[in-house]
Image (cartoon, rainbow, N blue to C red; front, side):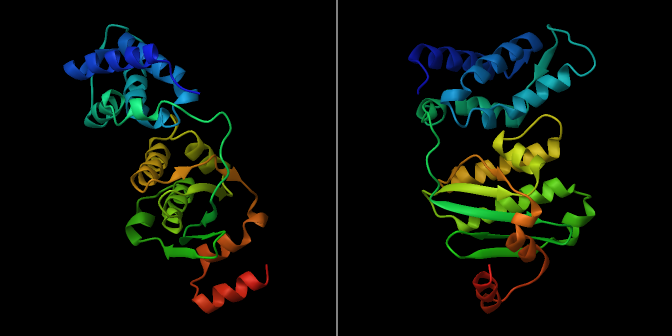
Length: 238
């Protein structure tokens, strides 16, 4: 499926107008977000490119909705508008398959308050302990789950279609939705995962939640430092 040419033009014209002034009323931003939301079925990366705009709109309406209130756009929001306007952005990414394609690689990841780990269907793995700075920042465990998933992308190659398996429903949801509105921290990390994938030409498929009991190897890798010989031995006993 693809976005009709007239809808592409409407979206780009609206984004260009707002970008030119660098500001917009609450009512105009509501119209913009509604327009961009309607394009999601045929634009897989749509949500990723309006999260900052959406956040600014919600903040502007947090106390009371004043449709005439002016919102001055942040640098992140301006970057998002640029993607919608650019021929290499929205126009080049305005079509999608009706059915999701099969993955070329599957990756399982896990995190706890000491470290994160992951392994892939190709037999390789990654793991590391969190830094003192990461732990002192009081990140929620779901943030660490998303970070572990983000770092697991090092196991994929450019051109891969990646299916992530995660034992945190919240982390899986934030990745699937390309961010969210309830937690700015989780949303930012999920968006960072998607941007990393884009920069490496990796396609993220819908992540799958699985129970901790089904994620034994990733859980082990997140807790214990491994040598290659140890990992090979562990796989042999799956």
